[in-house]
Image (cartoon, rainbow, N blue to C red; front, side, top):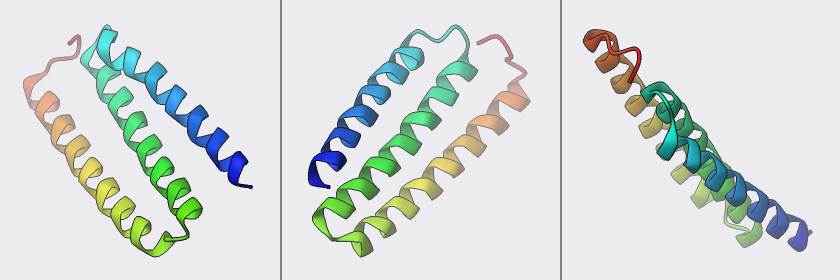
Length: 90
């Protein structure tokens, strides 16, 4: 099971690098925001898998919930900003 978790971590990390390219080269600002959201969710998944590896699920779940809440607030703020600005094309 240990090697399964390690391979899963490697696959998710590779996916994060691929999405990082979309964040860096996205044609619009919305592509970049969605890419950051995907990276945030992947980071939460990685934290929980590492928690399973370390047998410290209680600590990492709290950190993951806080990270998800901060991410949600950030996406809401960005959405409100671009709604008021009216910038649809980046």
